Length: 200
Image (cartoon, rainbow, N blue to C red):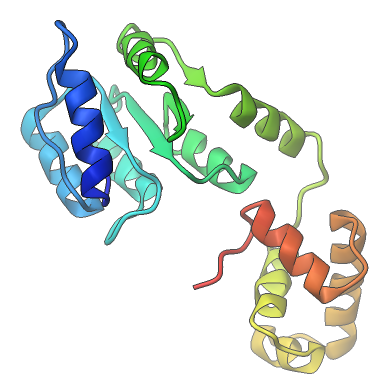
């Protein structure tokens, strides 16, 4: 169990250890410790938060699965942007749950994943389906969107990316069209909601 909030960890550990067939072998507060403890204990299932100090949940899964392709990680998080969901599933998450999950559903999810099944919360599945039916941004458009979010003007974005200001304008117009927005502020808002960008 990896989560940087002690209250969350202790609550979940209590729920799981109360199950007759379950035992939490380790609970840690950061990503690096999660990888270390996973390899030390080789658990049947790993519960991993998405945002933690050091390595985030996606990096933790990548590190774990690089040495154990059969690992069964479950993401348990408050983040439900479609970008986070897609990154997690690509990294090998067998389940994606939100922290408002009912204890009985969490326990059942762990049983299902242990049995080789996958489990995605309904709201998460809906977001993922919505993302897959939308037009995707190119890498260059993502770069432009990230720089828009830092408050840079087109000329400054062009200097950063080593492209002409007129090319930046074309990318911005395409971005607006794909995101269904009319301003840089709206583009940033949609980008944040979809997990395409994250403010530091």
